[in-house]
Image (cartoon, rainbow, N blue to C red; front, side, top):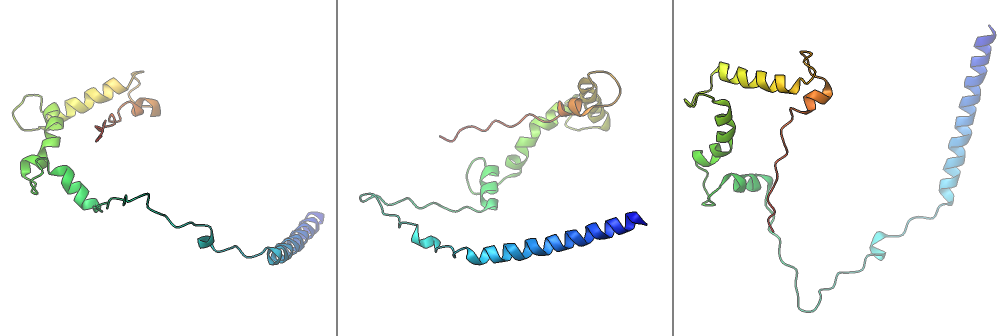
Length: 144
C-alpha cells in the first residue's frame, strides 16, 4: 500500500513542478524584446564597375537528364544513345557472345560474385563481406 501512496505523491510533485516550470518560462518570454526586422541588416548588392552578373539558365531536372542521354547533342535521343551505357554491363554477363543473356550465364556470374565475396567460405555473407559487392562509384570528369 505504501508503494501506491509514494507513487501517487511523486506523480503529484511532478505535475506541480511542471506547472511552475511552464508558468516561469511563459513569464520569461514576456521579458524578451521582439526581434528586429532582418531587412535592416542586409545591405543591398551593388554591381562592381560596369560588370553585370551573367544570367544563369535554369534547366529542369528532366532537361538535364535529357541532355545526359543525348550523346551527340542533336536534340534527339536515338535507341543507340539510350542503350549504349547498358551495353558494357550486358556484354560482361553475356559470356558466350551470342547477344542473348540466358539464365545460366546470369547465374554463373552471380554465383562467382557471391563466392568471391564470401571470404570465410561460410555460405553466407556478413555485412563486411556484403559491402565488398557494392558497385564502384562512378568517377565524373571535371567540366573545367
